[in-house]
Length: 171
Image 1 (cartoon, one colour):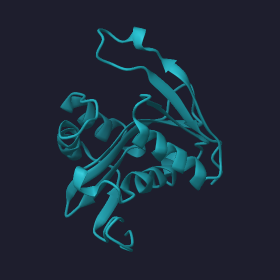
Image 2 (spheres, helix red, strand yellow; image 1 turned 60 degrees about the horizontal axis):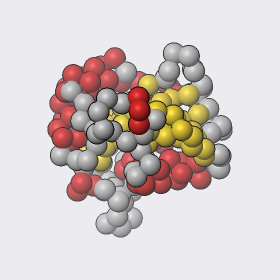
Image 3 (tube, helix red, strand yellow; image 1 turned 90 degrees about the vertical axis):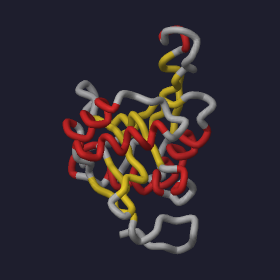
């Protein structure tokens, strides 16, 4: 359990675990009530079942209040790619996203992981700060580079995605 030092930290009843397919719908609902890119409910159910070893849910009173969807890329077995991090509005600013990343990196599935990768839009300062904090926590490097430019996305709705890499991580 997580300690409750003040109102800006997760309370004792926030529990982290690997998701099951039954958590997928709640993860999707959390996204639909946020500013995150909404994927189909199927994506969250699939990630919770097929990729549960590299995904995390945070629950309070058995309700999903946060999640991470991630996977280990087949061509880069020393990295975990974090696809999405979501935290319910009522729980933001309490360190849940950071705690979920640490939980993920401490999992058996990530025992050989040396790098954490993610793509983040240039205006998403909260996500950038989350991964910068992760680099500080592990006393390692944090880099960003151009990755998916705006021209690869259909229409004019999606910003470019920068690739962020934290590592090497020594556990």
